[in-house]
Amino acid sequence: MNQFVAPNLWVTARNVERLQFEDGYLAFDTDGNAGTTYRLYQAAFDRAPDPEGLGFWVRHFDTGMVTHQEMAGHFIRSEEFETKYGGAASVDNDAFLTLLYNNILDRDPDQPGFDFWQDQQENGLSRSEMLQYFSESQENIAKVAAAVDDGIWYV
Image 1 (cartoon, rainbow, N blue to C red):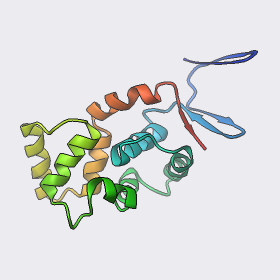
Image 2: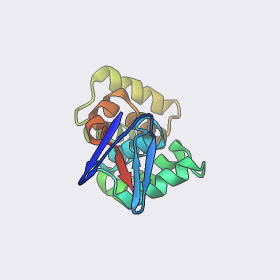
Image 3: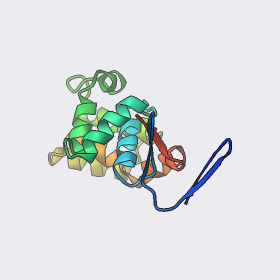
């Protein structure tokens, strides 16, 4: 149940995924496309998404114009991502993996986890797939939950 309070207005809504306003949307589908896109932004750029950019990607995700993995690939190729993580040519797989742990989960990798992901990389898992998996890990979902529990605003 979601409750909204404004001057002279009180609204209680049940089972609502999105509300549309004149100037944007408020999404409650934290396990759906809006939540997935928010977490990917947070994981890729270590920041909350800007409402306009989030809206762009949510609309593309909602309409099937992009998959989660394709979105992760776009983020990895962005200038902002390369500034945060380094370019593919300048950062080896182990360093990239350590950066994922540090920037997304805010911790150093544990050895069993590091070994698992290192093995996945050696067996062909791409960096965009790794970003996708880290963004949807239970640890990251829990980390981002407080930021999205009251809804996700985008335009």
